[in-house]
Image (cartoon, rainbow, N blue to C red):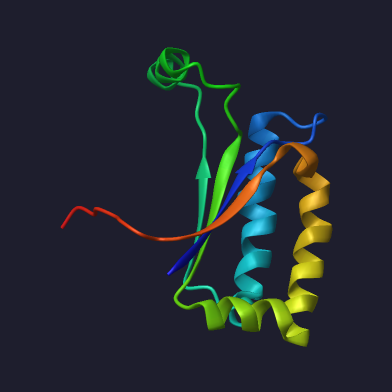
Length: 124
């Protein structure tokens, strides 16, 4: 399984609440619309919260300023990801999603990384 993790920072003109609302209510359905073309198995939005415990954990580790959220996309196989990135439907979906992301994500300050899931624990 391959996982893309996108660490999101909002455009400066948006509050965290505005950013998260747009992401959930506008961008989320757009991702869902393109699910078949993008061939992903899982898409998650993790919206960060203002929380004393989270702030304390970051300070203890010397972490940078927190992100506004995290997006996760998981593909079952590398072939699924390849197909999503090379098919005309997948490329068209990617262009539409990127155009929308520019409306609310500070892309230059929102790193992403693709990796292979090597170890995981889940609650039964």
